[in-house]
Length: 79
Image (cartoon, rainbow, N blue to C red):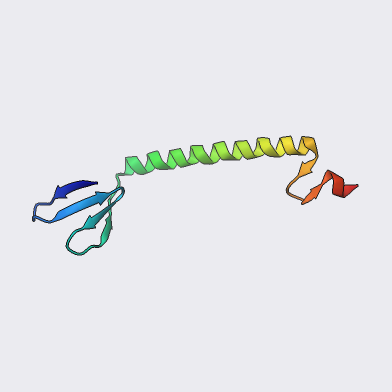
């Protein structure tokens, strides 16, 4: 928590990405620059790609073991 004093004398306490106005008690979101948003978007895309790749590998391994999660049928039920 960092304290800042604005030009008009208001004290504000910042909590992460939001600022609490001491007088009104309301939360005001902090405006992010476009560069920060692009950075967050690219990081999110990397996470999604990594998760997709991991789930594909898991499906391939399960299929080789005879486990099919999509059809809800295991190899033992098909026989």
